[in-house]
Length: 311
Image 1 (spheres, rainbow, N blue to C red):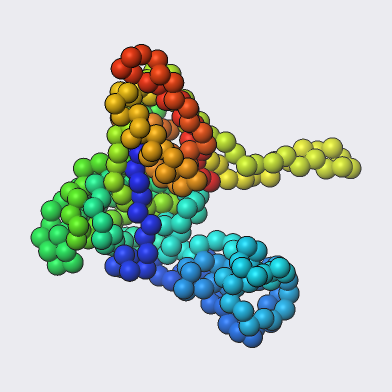
Image 2: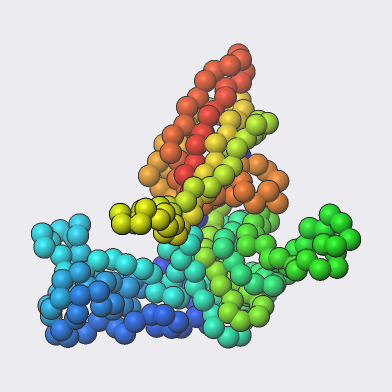
């Protein structure tokens, strides 16, 4: 099992992006003292978030300071609703996608920290190119192009008639860890090009996953029953991945592994359930639901881990 500790991308780290702000479905920027109707949307450039009006009216308090949970707010007028289109790939959710309506999606990030791993989730593109330079105008120290179009052929009919599909997940574990690295990710394909999550960080080997590891998904979809007709309708919801596994750890590394687990409780990261990153169901962007460790041998312990993915 490998854990990738993702870096929280800030304004200062985002060097450039072809996804504008506002763009796509982003609403207009919040303005005071506009009289907003119930359900109206407005975005804030400072937070890169879209807010939804839950009480009609006009107030002079910025939406990010007028939501539930903000210190001193007892009767909020706004709800934190969604990320802006440009920053959707950097938020904690996976199902919120940044969308490039036309042309290539090109993002350059300078994390200012050592990083050896890059993960793309919920991507919709035919090709992805990654380039790393040592500094803004420095030499190219890494470049790689990945074809995201795949096809699984089991018979002649599928070979002739079944359409090609795209892989939505990409994991790279061989980035050169330069402190002044500028990482440029280019997604190409028929418009629109989309990306649900861009994660950059450092990978840590946790332990050897044993056979029997499980990966799956849960849905937030709900069934609605019409009281008059008893007709059942499905209200579609978001999907989140889950993973349960056991891994072997040498007893000499138990303290280190447990410390890392404890520090990640309540935090989101990328978890590779198996070292073969081509097994996409075992690539989960989420948090530790629980873990247990049992000493099974004089030199070996077994961890049982459950990871809950983000929607």
